[in-house]
Length: 224
Image 1 (cartoon, helix red, strand yellow):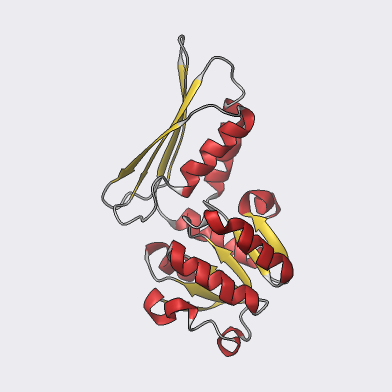
Image 2 (tube, one colour):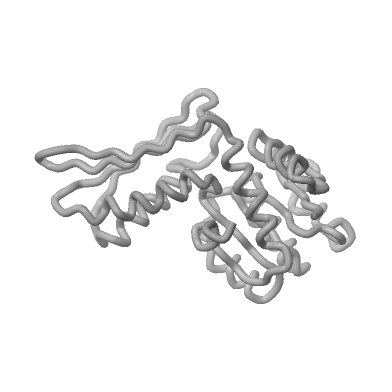
């Protein structure tokens, strides 16, 4: 397959490396090489099976609009743009395919499911802590927001505090805490490297090739 990776940051560069390791042809563009989605033309996307985006919230929106308008398929690991999610899903339903996720790590997918189970406990209050590298643009992280949404889907209306920390080159740590008068439970995911995110994103791109529509990675990860 041929993939176009948008973003040459730490995660985007690793996505390109993992895709090549899995036998795919890969092109990669930095944000400066694709200003306002200028490189996403019909000519440049010819032969590209899927685009993988790890850029910025603003750039990701422009990239999605450009790729979907041309009927392309795009996997978006960038977060911070979900206020426009309905618009992007609507575009994908008309043309192309969109696969998005707040986190493409399979370990984090398990964290999501364990959190849903933890939220069923009666008599507990819940909180979330997340730590990322200092250059991460959005806070709280998309993963932390997803964890909060999962708990609130089980217990509507409850308030859940999220503490965000930006430290050095932290790869990503999320802790869900449930506390009561008698005990405290914690579920924790601590990424040792970004490779888990990159592997999941590449597998997502492999999955979306030839498909049409819009999906959250949580919906399809069991098919990988």
